[in-house]
Length: 214
Ligand SMILES: C[S@@+](CC[C@H](N)C(=O)[O-])C[C@H]1O[C@@H](n2cnc3c(N)ncnc32)[C@H](O)[C@@H]1O
Image (cartoon, rainbow, N blue to C red; front, top):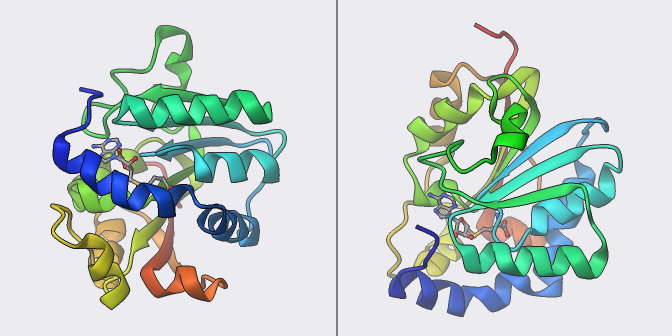
């Protein structure tokens, strides 16, 4: 694990420019800034890539702590390089797989891997790569009561389909995402408007809340 397949390398080679572009980073940061989030929180960024969402959260919530992980070492290497450059020290970046989480979390961070320990879990552009129902159900267990899961997915529109191209990932419909939230016991689901029109063309944001710990 940790090494990208040729297909993945090609995909992120092509998409990499877009994902790391200043425009894309700013759009995601604007989205994060538009959210009503409380500071002093514990946040998990699942499939964090080069850390775009985590960096925006770090800037918005100066007293919060963030754990971010991605399957590919190359992504985490880039994320930690940016972290050093911009001195954003409240993010712990790890190489880790959604399917095996929390296995790769080191012992001293074990508290992070406990059930009901996160206020917010972000999944940006990653649920398309994994089993939607299983992943949302798995990670909702790590949410505290009133904690929120925030999916910033790829839209089922033409723009989203163009991004997908020949790639082996599944674009989920709004209905599928809402159903996965309900199955996972998350409620107060909400579709959030992406103010940035360019981002809105190919992304969709939906949140769900864990009202009750069972
Ligand atoms: C489109 S990128 C999004 C990155 C970042 N969240 C963002 O919004 O800029 C999707 C990321 O998910 C990661 N990924 C795919 N499958 C994964 C898995 N099973 N576990 C962890 N990360 C995964 C990829 O390596 C990639 O960095």
